[in-house]
Amino acid sequence: MGDTSPWPRVKSEIYGLCGRNPKSNRLVPSIAELEPDHVVLDIGCGPGAAVRAAAGVVARAVGVDRSEAMITIARRRSRLFSNVEYFVAGAEDLPLPDAMFDRVWTIHAFHHWESPDQGIVECLRVIKPGGRLLIVESETKGSHGLDASMAAELAHRLRSAGFDDATVSKPHRQLVVTGMRAD
Ligand SMILES: C[S@@+](CC[C@H](N)C(=O)[O-])C[C@H]1O[C@@H](n2cnc3c(N)ncnc32)[C@H](O)[C@@H]1O
Image 1: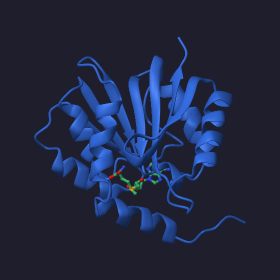
Image 2: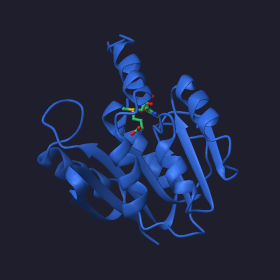
Image 3: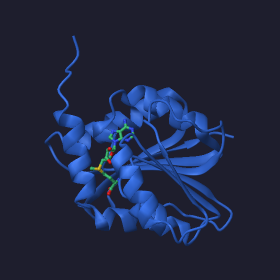
């Protein structure tokens, strides 16, 4: 039987609400090589800081979070943006069309996903051919991020799922695992 404790979910909401990752939320839009015509998706967007950072650069920015409370806050904080949209949804079942996004990222949220493999399949589905996934986590040996060998293993999982060019980098002490959907 799976763990039915609500604590992991409550904990991830608390972390999101506290806005613990301001640096990563600025970092990702800056390393994602965004273009003005891009459509981007942030999975586990929390209060939406990275969505808003991207919205100033791209055509359209979408955030999803499984927490309704987070999405309510994200919508409130983004009310002045006309190119931003949010949905309550889990990474594992995105209510979004195939091949919609040029960039998909998830910041300090991947380690909370209930089914990482299903989430990766969903990311591949919604990314356009030639588009890119970025998974950003703190470098840690604990359960709240990845260590170097876990990141290498994740890059391998991305390749197995069908991503090309899966690599690990470490900008500004964050681990970024990225892969491209082949044309
Ligand atoms: C630590 S917070 C990070 C929030 C934001 N990305 C940031 O860096 O400020 C993790 C967020 O991921 C969300 N989350 C966890 N598992 C998820 C899943 N499977 N699908 C979508 N969102 C998820 C939580 O509700 C929470 O808002």
